[in-house]
Image (cartoon, rainbow, N blue to C red; front, top):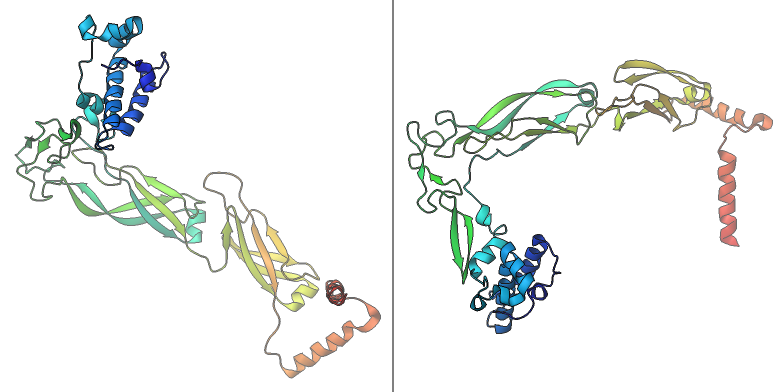
Amino acid sequence: MSKRDYYEVLGVERGADPGAVKKAYRRLAMKFHPDRNPDDTAADEKFKEATEAYEILSNADKREAYDRHGHAGVDPQAGGAGFEGNFSDIFGDVFGDIFSGGRGGGRGGAQRGSDLRYGLELDLEQAVHGDDVEISVPVLTACEPCSGKGSKPGSTPVTCQDCAGAGQVRVAQGFFSIQQTCPRCRGAGQVITDPCNSCQGAGRVEKRKTLAVQIPPGVDTGDRIRLTGEGEAGMAGGPAGDLYVQVEVREHAIFTRDGRNLYCEVPISFVDAALGGELEVPTLDGRVRLKIPPETQTNKMFRLRGKGVTPVRGGGVGDLLCRVNLETPVKLNDKQKDLLKQFKESLTEGGKKHSPKESSWFQGVKDFFDRLTD
């Protein structure tokens, strides 16, 4: 028996709670375990010393005796409680949760089915206004002939001989052993000897289900719609998982969405930009008239309030922002070209400035070249 103070061995205070004691032993056991330190007698002694200390301090009665009387209170030769455990059991208690459940594993029973994901593409109009769509999904469903049990109707599973129905088996590794899920019954504790002809004992078969999906108004790319219980059927009668419909909104020919707002490009003629006028622009609710003031410059943004999107998570409706894009006329005939030349000449008459950015731009160019020559 080690004569070092057990608290010192584990590196914990005397008032340490059981969780701290267990954590300290876990750290030392992993560090000095013989499998990690082959042919290292010093590490082997430290492992045994830590295990002995943990066996005493993890037991409430032995710890109390040790706290009162020291090593004499737990020394069998002195009439104390003593070290009565074995390394295998103690190591399994501490590390069983790492190796497939340890002592508390228990047998496997009904298991919830897996969740599924389905990608759904929508038009912008469907996403903004909402819609009802049908989807077809391949999914594992409970086998009808055997009601999901896996055994042929009229037969029942038998107790697994390898684990005696416990669902766990003990596997020896060196001088200690661990518990793990039984490989034969996979933790169920039972084995199907007469499998169902329809599902071959799996309890589930793949079918294609047609489901109705209600698309709420305002959804956007990345949003998910959960259909509860429409995922894969559970094992051994467990509940079904859920189906998550992942929304992907297709690109639109006219509009671009950014949150609650919509954007669009509106081409306007040189005449409409200079003289002003009205243009007919589309919205998702129909056509509206957009008033263009005189002397409108290209890239000017106009806001149509309330013509955007109402987000699915609530909040006020967004706007439609229209950016005007000045178009240069093409395929001019001789008469049109002559008129434009006359118009250009008229702009130089009277000394008035008709191009608001022209003067500042040329001044910037002049300053740039002046700096280069300095």
